Amino acid sequence: MTDMMNLHGFQRDEHSDTSDTPVTSSPTVSPLRNQRYEAIGQVVEVSGGGARIKIQGQRLRDLAGDADPSVAMSGQVGSQVKLESGRKWLLANVRNLKVLDDGQDTVTAEIDFLGEGDEDNQSGKLVDFKRGITGYPIPGNRVFPVTGDDLKQMFAADERPHIEIGTVYPTKDVRGALYIDAMLGKHFALLGSTGTGKSTSAALIMHRICDMAPEGHIVMIDPHGEYSAAFKGYGELFNVDNLAMPYWLMNFEEHCEVMITSSGAEKQRDADILAKCLLHARSKNRAAEGLTKLTVDSPIPYTLTDLTNSIQNEMGLLNKATDTAPYMRLKTKIDELKADPRYSFMFSGMLVADSMATFISKIFRLPAKGKPISIVDVSGVPSDITSVVVAVLSRLVFDYAIWSRNELQRPVLLICEEAHRYVPSDKTSSGQAVRKILERIAKEGRKYGVSLGLITQRPSDLAEGVLSQCGTIISMRLNNDRDQAFVKSAMPEGARGFLDVIPALRNRECIVCGEGVSIPIRVSFDDLERDRCPASSDPSFTDLWKQSGDEEAMVTRVVKRWRAQGR
Image (cartoon, rainbow, N blue to C red; front, side):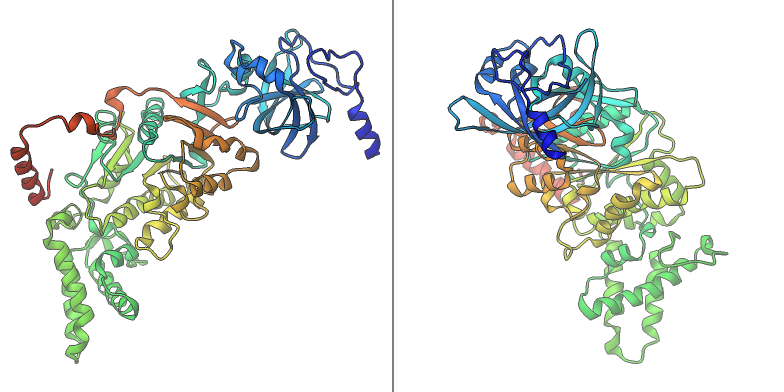
């Protein structure tokens, strides 16, 4: 049976046109009609996710001068070709090219299947394109170039809610779209080396989403203070001057990261003391009255004075003075947090009031009032507690989603810039609380209506498994080999060949794969209005180093702000 099928697939059609290329075709397959361009080759081998095709080198050179840029690129690495299969067209992406040493100017190519569409009975054009394939070509079937009209059918956005972010390469008029529900429902990642336009592209995507959903709920963690300039007037901006995040919102693990400075066996002893005293301090608040399940993790307000008094009382119960060391360590650290003005945005005595509902409303944009995004600038946060601040914000997003399941659903999108800082591959590093909550959101968030957006320049430094939880990968140019390999390993087999062009992308170009697009696409991002751009442009050394003047006064002003720890 198998032998008969193979012979059948390789029989030649004596009536087919072979003037330009020796194309073979199965006699049972009706030739597709009204093709403006002749075949460029034929299928020679088929596998589950792709095929190997043979192309005439002269045909590729002839097409390179075609006025249609899609046709001119057909058959080249990273471009698309279409294969006849019964009355359907199969679309595939070219992964590589190799010259055959047969003396006949023949090139072989490995291709990955993208999807299939029907043939229009009148024009023979591609219509009704769908991702994935339902049938495979037969060795000997012909291969044709893809036209601009074909690409419009392939990348045309359907009726699902979507945003347009740029132009599909190599065309100049085919728009690249992201399906919002699919992209946010399964998380997404934006990757790219420094200087590729990553921040501007992130701002473009966020602005498009905000324009489409003015009553959305987006929280963006901004570690460099770049995005405040991009969303001034379009969202709410928070920094150390107006964040006012109460310290008592921290859970026990986050308290430990801030207040415990010891290590080893002493760290566990300090944690036991802190747990007992923290529970006692929380229980003294009126909000704790009547609660039968009060724990150290409960977000009940307490005063730092009550906490230090509780530690003092526990220390006074001891008989040996040598055993006071862990109590003194905790008390000293808490006093330091209260006295240091750098921590006042979080540990101020003014934040003891029960402001949890107000804080959640303003950060999560409930209601949005036409400003659906909160930019939380953590560049002014002391580096030793930055990870804790991000952990608290991330955990509040997740916990709110869990405890609001009986209410009207209000999905929240959490975006982490420089994500490799908070979810590092090194499990021994500090900041384990933020790592745990972001990993949990990546794994479970979609069940509760929490979407995660990761932005990073070093995907290989991300924790293993986090990137693979992102259903949509938006990859700009990556220069590091490890990063390229890491991204490819996180993508499905059919898209990996498409990702081979990542190191060859230009600035503000990207490859988009996954749930947010019908098929993998290469997109050139739209230009963004100046007032919507982040403050991330590179300085012009050659211009700035030709300027002089006002240096003495400038240094004086900088020193004054430096000493005052304010901008």
